[in-house]
Length: 296
Image 1 (cartoon, rainbow, N blue to C red):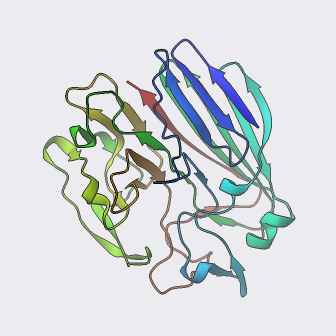
Image 2: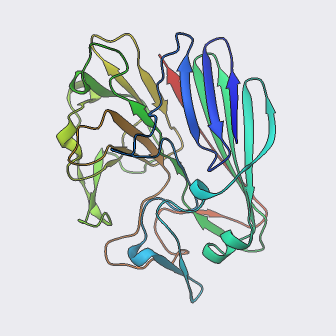
Image 3: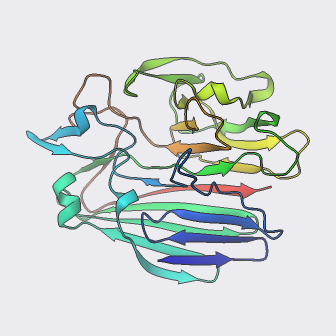
């Protein structure tokens, strides 16, 4: 099922499958969200929980038991319920069930709330640990944005301009996460942004798959020097930012992905309670993470 929320500036459509965005339009009717052409990428803006990206051999261990989980976790493939909503906001909810517990042995409630304020779409993730033991998880977003956003401009006219304070990373410099050919973590290396924190977009920059950065400022703007329309993504609580489109293609979109954690390390079937960087949520507590998409 789909729901639409709106205010005087924006009209946003979300679906209950995965709680994902389907459309983000301004008052002129410009569509900012990638519309999911399967020739490039069939998805649009999946929500990632309880894991980010791939697990080695598609599995992990926890307290001596082995579990299997697909890429980016199970929320993207789950049907969420509309827990509450108003004209300009909606809150969707998923509680653990037999299917989730087969992959992830916890009792929990996951919520995603979308709320419009002016030209901003605030995204709020909440995870309540209803279990008697500590939960370990990663959480994040994966929205794709149309590039170009206006007629007469090209993909190469756009850039990502970083601004603001560094995000949740504990590292003091910008670093790129290294990946194996199968997209598992191999470490990090220093990564130099351009002058004034600018990263020009080029299709070939994704030929080695996603660019995942740590130590970057907590917001980034997708813009063209000669363009009128832009998108700013702010992610002050996230440790990593992924940037991606389909490798070896001229895909007319770019994903800007705020992540709390990383995929499995190369060659390691992770013990979930020991994997570096995962959120550890004690029994009975609730985790909340806010980020936003601003149309400019």
